[in-house]
Length: 93
Image 1: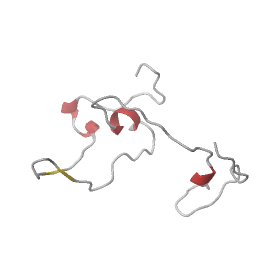
Image 2: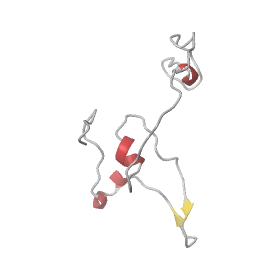
Image 3: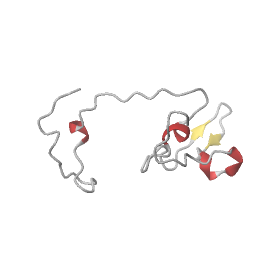
Image 4: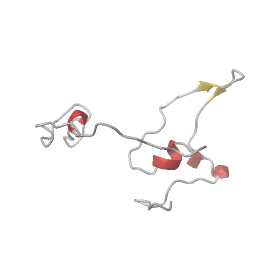
């Protein structure tokens, strides 16, 4: 991990309510996320408060040129996924 003498000093930045430390002072060099086949951000991290997994108005063209708009799995009960109901899910979730 990188060492920074200012890491423990909160810095007020525009858009950072409560004077959160600057990201560069976190001491975190890498975040590794290993995913399982056919799983998305919704499956793994959508339960984290404030997690932003999907940009607004995002669209993609599929193999046939048709425009597809992503949606939250929890927005449609027919998908059966309604997010994690635990504040801190255990390893069995």
